[in-house]
Amino acid sequence: MRKQAPVVANEIATAVAGKLVLGAYDGYASCPLTTAIGKTILAEFCYGGKVTPTLPLNPSKERWVGWRIKLTGLPLMYWHYMLKGYVWFPKHNTDFKEEAP
Image 1: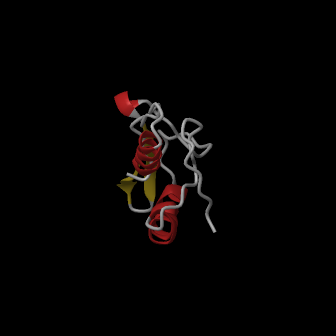
Image 2: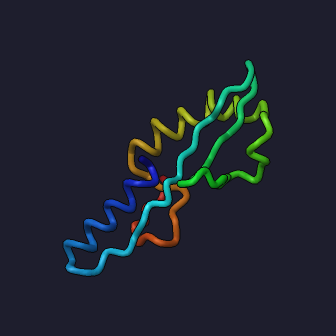
Image 3: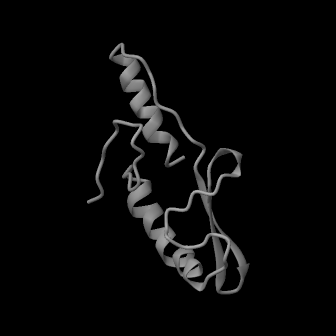
């Protein structure tokens, strides 16, 4: 949903302005998959199952850092940034721009 909302907002604004709508959502999704106590795999992918990691880590390897991200980082991002509408990784195909505080 976080990646869909900026595309939808941009396309609505473009359509209201009477311009051609060109944006598209690539199906990006992410989730920490718990593999053991203290370890996760950070799964990030697009339509068709294409792996699209945002961190420079091998997404097929379980890591303790993923566990820490799941317990502390993701709740922080969700409650303090995502629910407020901030976009951290905007795609180049949208004109919707907003910065984190």
